[in-house]
Structures are given as C-alpha cells and as structure tokens.
Amino acid sequence: MYACSPSWSDDWISEGDLSRILDQLSGSIAPAPGGSSRIGVNYGLHFTGGEPFLNYRLLLRAVELAEDYDIPSVFVETNCFWCVSRERAEEMLLELRRAGLDGVLVSVNPFLVEYTPFERLVLVAELAERIFDGGLIIYQREFYDQFRRIGLRGTMSFEEYLARLGVNGLRWAELLPMGRACYKLRELFRRYPAKVFFDEDCRGSLLRSWHAHIDNYGNLITGYCAGLSLGDARRLDELVEGGLDLDERPILGMLILEDLGSLYRFAVKEYNYVERSDGYISKCDLCLDIRRHIVEQAGADEYPELAPREFYKHLEEERGG
Ligand code: SF4
Image: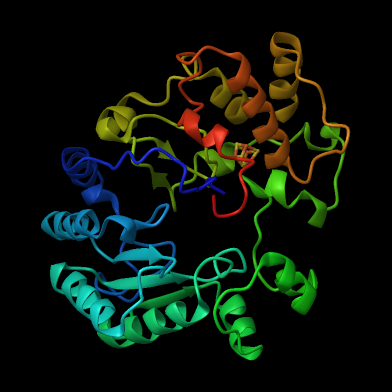
C-alpha cells in the first residue's frame, strides 16, 4: 500500500517532530475497548513503517514520548526481521514494555515471508503474547494459520505461495487493491474500464475519524490513501481548527467534493492522461495511476497533497525493494 522499499531515502522522523505530533494527538486517541493498557487494531496509537525496528533507538524513544503524553493503547507493528536471537528479542520487548508499550502487532502475509523466515514471526508472536500479557495482534491471522498448516520453514516466494495454495489462498484474507498491488499484482484481479469508477467519491475514506496514519515527513494520511496528504500533522491543531484548504489542494477537493470522473477529466484535459488499455483493478488503481501521471508532469511544488513525492517513484519496484 505504501510502496515500501529499502531504496527510499532514510529520512527518519526527528524527535522534535515526533514530540510535537504526539502532543497534539494526545487528547484525541480512543483507548481499546478493554482499557488503555490493552490494544486493538483500530484503537490507540501504533508505531509502524516501513519497519519501526529498523531504528530501534528511535522506536524506544517514541514509546517513551507516548507514555509521557499519556497516550492509551500503544502498540508497534513489525515484520519481525530483527528477531534473529531469542535472548535479544526478549530483551528488546521487555525494554519496550517498561517504556510503556502495550503490545505488538505481528504482520503476516505472503509478501513478508518472501524475505523474513516464518520462524521469526512465530517467535515474536510467542514472546509478545507472554511479555505483554496477551497484548498481541497477528495480522492477518488467516495467513499465519495457513503457514503453520503447511509447516512453512524459512522464506517462500510469492510464486511458490501461489503454486502451493493457489489464488484461493488469498481469498481468506484482505489484499487491498491499492498501492503497489495495482502495478505488480494486477494479473490477480479482474479489470474494468475507467468509466466504471467515475461515480465514486472518496469522502468517506478521506474524512473518516478512525485509523489515520502520519508519516515521517508529517503528512496526515487517512483512508490508507498513500501519496495523498491532508496536511502537515506537525501543525495538526491549526489543521483541525482552520479546516482543509481545498483550493490549495485541488486534487483532494475533487476526490472529496466531486468524484473520480472529475479527476479523470481534469487529468485528460490538463495533463493528457491516457486511459490504460488493460483496465483498472479498482477505483484506487484509477486514482493512483492518474495521480502518478500528474506527479510526472507537474512541478515539484504544485499539488502539495500529492505527498510524499517519493512514494510515486517506488510503486513499480520489485516486491521488497
Ligand atoms: S480512490 Fe483514491 S482517494 Fe479514494 S480511497 Fe482510493 S486511493 Fe483513496
């Protein structure tokens, strides 16, 4: 979804920005239904990436800051690449727990086990379950169970996954047709002409009040719509107070106030966008392909909502980088 890759610039969020953002968020975060020390996938605050354990010291500091601001239900999402030694992994999780972390979300899917041996995921799940007293989410559990069922050891390429479990294996779980999937996995989906999606608007996704992300540059990203920034979360209070300036962010304006047909006609008229002859797998495929085309044509300081710009460069990379 976020076109993650080792070839992105290593622009870590600064401690100052992190602190500023957490401070402004702190009064508005809903705890998990079980209480502020329990976790839930759409509750509380999660640190994610990329992969947050790539910079363990920064992750630890982020957890300490969240604790200082009394933020409830704090967890970290991880692909578990770092879990090469049981002892060290246990030490790190205990240190995070002492700093205020409430739990861990272990990411499990066929794309991840292409690179990370499954045993590492199993080990983190086992340690987190114990250390965080049940504060463990396995996402997605269906894949975890599939891999256990087939006795997976080590890594497995996506091609092997398809050969062993078939495309039907993917039906058990969510594979959102957005981001890199639109380019690298399009053969798995049925495709439609652009006009099928013209009446769709994205108001619900872009203005929803649950599960938003803020990236390392401060971009506020709602609705999983990577590459579309609602504004600078370092100035979140001003953004909430003053509202979205849709004149300054016209592409967001079209997606919120009009529909995808408006964005399509705008791109054809202003940027000679040409409809893909092989169709689109989803409305997000159409939206993303248009946005990517505009980014290639427009100046770097036009359309501040198309951020971070680097996202658009990594869409077609091989899975994993
Ligand atoms: S069509 Fe675009 S704005 Fe709408 S949900 Fe998909 S990515 Fe987000």
